[in-house]
Length: 491
Ligand SMILES: Cc1cc2nc3c(=O)[nH]c(=O)nc-3n(C[C@H](O)[C@H](O)[C@H](O)COP(=O)(O)OP(=O)(O)OC[C@H]3O[C@@H](n4cnc5c(N)ncnc54)[C@H](O)[C@@H]3O)c2cc1C
Ligand code: SF4
Image 1 (cartoon, rainbow, N blue to C red):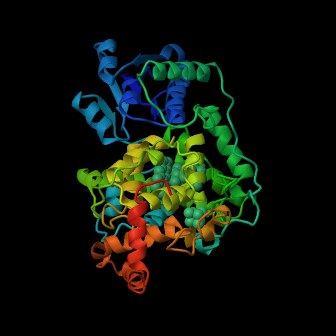
Image 2: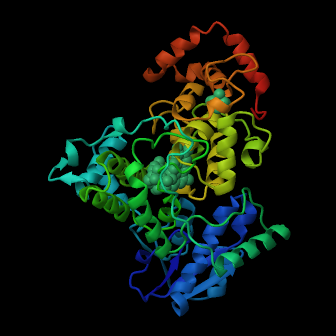
Image 3: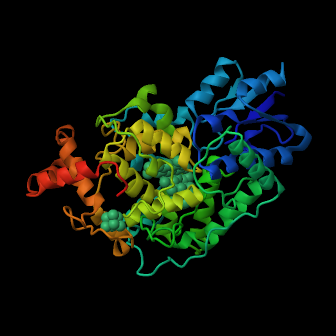
C-alpha cells in the first residue's frame, strides 16, 4: 500500500483507503511568508495537521519544513499517492512528480466526470438545474421523484429582513476548547512573526472552528439541533451584534475535509423528517451545501485555465491598506463596512451576504483589480481556498467573467443594506442620500459604478432598467465628482 500524502484540507478519515494506511502530513512554512493570511487561518491549518498527526500516531509522518520540495527530499525514495488535490497548483505539483492520484475529490459529492455528464448538451449551466439534479440523484428531500413538499425552491420564504432586535436569539454555534496543540501552534506563529518569517492579518483569538473529525461532528450535530430550524427565513439578513445569525459556520470544517457535504445534507433532512426543522430552513441549507458548494467546486475545474485572469470590466485599482489589512478601526465611518471588517478581523469569517453585498460590492464599485480582490478573499477568510475563490469572487462577486456565472453584477446601493440589516440606523450616512455630506458611499458608489461601466453593461438586458435610471439622475456630475474625490479613502 502506498503512503498517502494528506494535504491540509484532507483531514477526514475518507482520505485514507484503509484505516491503517501509512500517511504523510507536511507543514510548509514558506507559504506564510509569501502571502499575508489571516492568523486564524494559519492557526486552523497547522492545528488541523498536527491534531491529525497525533490521531494517526506511528502510522503518520509529520514533516515540518519550509517547502513541499524540502519535505520530499527529506522523505527520500517513498512511493506516494494522493487524493485529487483541490487546486490547479497542487494538482500540477503531484502530477509532475508522477504520484498516483485517486481521481475523486473525497471532500465533495460530485466528480469531474459526473459534472461533465451533467454539462453535456446543455446551453446554460444554471445552478438551479444542477441543484435539482443533485437532489434527485442523491435522493435528498425527495418523495419518490417529486421534491418533498412539492417545491424545489423555497427561496421566497427565505428572504426576510432581520427581526427588530439586536440578535436573532438562537444559541451560538458550538465552540471547541483549545488544547496543548493549539498552544504550541500559537507559540510557533508568534515566533515566526517575531523572526520575520511570516506576516499575518487579523486577531489571534481562541480557535472557534473544528480541526478534528470529533469536533466537526459535534459542531454539525449542535447546528442541526439548535440553529438549523431558524436558518432559512433570515439567511440573507445581517445584524451588527449577531454576525453568526443562524448560519452553520461549518465551512471551515467542510473545507478541511472533516465533514462530507452529503452527511451534512442528510443530517438536515433527518431533522425535517423527524419534525425538528421546517422545510424552508432545511431546503435552504441543503441548497447551499449540495447545490452551491458542489456547483462552485465543479465550475472551478470546468472553467478554462485563464478564468482567473478575467477582468471584463477593466478594473485596475489596488486594494487600499485600510481595507486589506483588516486594521481599519477608527478609520471607517460607514457602519456596515466598518462592522463587517471588524468581524472579519476578529474571526476570519462573515456570512455570505456581508461577503457579497458589503465587501465584494464595495470592491466592485470602487473598481479594484479582481485578481487582487480574489487573492485577498483567499487570504482573509478561514474557509478560503483556490477552488472556492474563482467562481465566488472572480465570477459572482466581481463580475470579472463578464456574466458567465451571474447574469448581472452584484452591485447595489445602500437601500439593499438598509432593508437587510440594522447597520444604517447607527450610521453617519443616509442610504437615501447620494450627494453631500451624508451621501451613503454604497448608494453614491453604485451610481458611479454604473456611470463608469455603462458602455460595458449596455448589452446586458438585466441592466437596461438601472442604466435608464442613471440617465434620469440630475445630480450625476456632482455625484461622479464626489466619488472621484472620495476615491479609495476609507468611507
Ligand atoms: C464573495 C464570496 C466569497 C466567498 N468565499 C468563500 C470561501 O472562501 N470559502 C467558502 O467555503 N465559501 C465561500 N463563500 C460562500 C459562502 O459565503 C460561505 O461558504 C458561507 O458563508 C460559510 O458560512 P457557513 O458555513 O455558515 O455557511 P451556511 O450559510 O451555513 O451554508 C452552508 C454551507 O454551504 C456551503 N456554501 C454555500 N454557498 C457556497 C458557495 N457560494 N460556495 C461554496 N460553498 C458554499 C458552505 O460550505 C457552507 O458551510 C463565498 C461567497 C461569496 C459571495
Ligand atoms: S448608510 Fe450606507 S454606509 Fe451607512 S450603514 Fe447604511 S449602507 Fe452602509
